[in-house]
Amino acid sequence: MAEGTQADAAGTAVLLVCCPDQRGIVAALSQTLFGLGANILDADQHTDPEAGQFFQRIRFDMADLTCDRPALQAAVSDVAARYAMTWSLRYGDRRKRVAIFVSKYDHCLYDLLLRERSGELEGDVALIVSNHPDLEPVARQFGLPFHVLPITRENKAEQEAKEVALLEAERIDLVVLARYMQVLTGDFIGAFPSRIINIHHSFLPAFIGGRPYHQAHERGVKLIGATAHYATTDLDEGPIIEQDVTRASHRDSVAELVRRGRDLERVVLARAVRWHLEDRVLAYGRKTVVFD
Image (cartoon, rainbow, N blue to C red; front, side):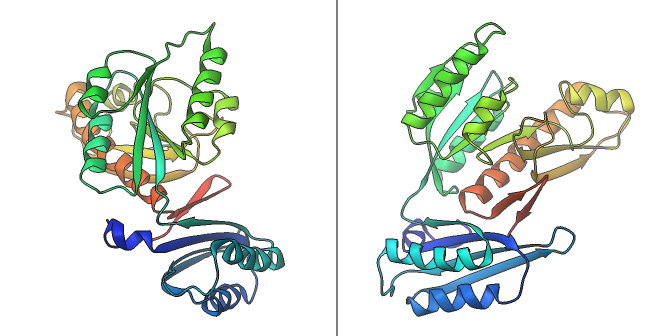
């Protein structure tokens, strides 16, 4: 883990804030936390002058807090009200629950499951959902529930309603689309705003939609990439969390581009998921702030 062991994380909390930029924000937050006995371990901030917005991430130790958690939240809420803040406070002893959606490709699924098993992720994969039965053996290998909900044009709304009900019943915090080859409806996306991460096998905004490696090959591109972003109702246009590229040449076949692209997809998706689970990402408009 980037900030210590899981045991260390259990005694910490992370505060994320977003508000109109104005004087006194940093002082107000730090003084409030200090006054309650919190020890700030690190703080990072960003101001977008064009949007007039301020963003901050504060991670602090709660070992010497002089109040309980409801009182802590009430104190933060008081500051938030003064500065018109949108904020969230996450405690390290409450790990996020993750659902992975897949179709037939297994490379991103295997990668995330192995990273979780090795302790790289501050979250727990609770279940796997698919529109095909093909990857059920992978779920069985890792001892995870596997739910198959085949989707057609006629039953899409009904099946998505079942998926949402399942995720809510399982208290899922984050949905990861690990090459899930379905376009989600607005109803599904609306149930999990900024909590659905998709991996697109292209360096967006180039080659949106299906078969991007084929499109890249036809154009003779010299770079191919992968993009992890939050899913929105605008296909492949949600706020971007992470991207990466690798060089290509005229000698590369489509199959070679696909092979190399899948390596990128694994890494880019894993970074985005890890950063989200560590509360390093704030989405606003069509952008994100990703704190170090």
